[in-house]
Image (cartoon, rainbow, N blue to C red; front, side, top):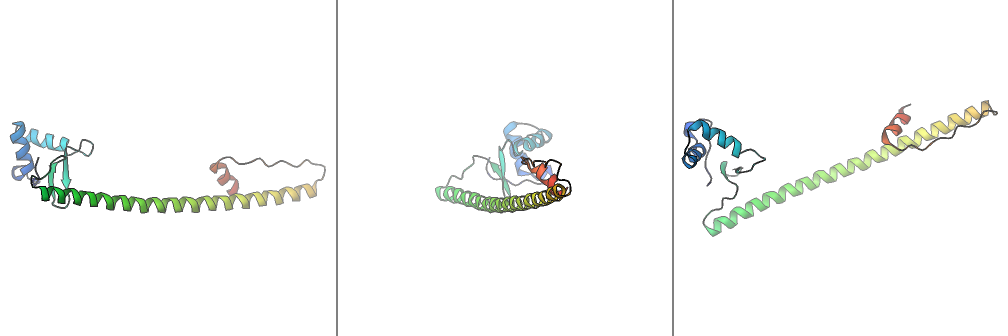
Length: 148
C-alpha cells in the first residue's frame, strides 16, 4: 500500500477507501481490517511518523533516489534508537553496580555488628559456645540481616 492519510472520519480516510477497494467490502469491514493490519504485532501497515501517513510495510517508492533516501532515513532513525537504548543500558548497568556496592557495604556493616555482639556475649558468658556465622547466599537474606 502506498503512503495514505487516515482520518478519524471514516468517509474522509484514504486508507479505509484503499482497503475497501482492494478487499471489495463496506466501510465497517474496512475499519476492522485496518485495525487488524495496523496492530504492532502484525506490522502489515506501519505509520510513517515523518510524513504522518500509513503505508504498507514493504512499500518502496518507484524512483531510485527516493527509495535510497527513504531507506537512509529509516536507517538513521534505527541508529538513533540504538544509541538511545545503549545509553539507557549504560545507565542501568551503572545503577546495578551502585546497588551491588551498597548491598556489600550493608552486608559488611551487619557482619561487623554481629561479630561485636558475639564477642560481647562471649565475654559475658565464657562457658557458652560461640555461634558460627553462616555465609549469606542470597540478596534477600543480606537485606534482612542488614536491617535486623
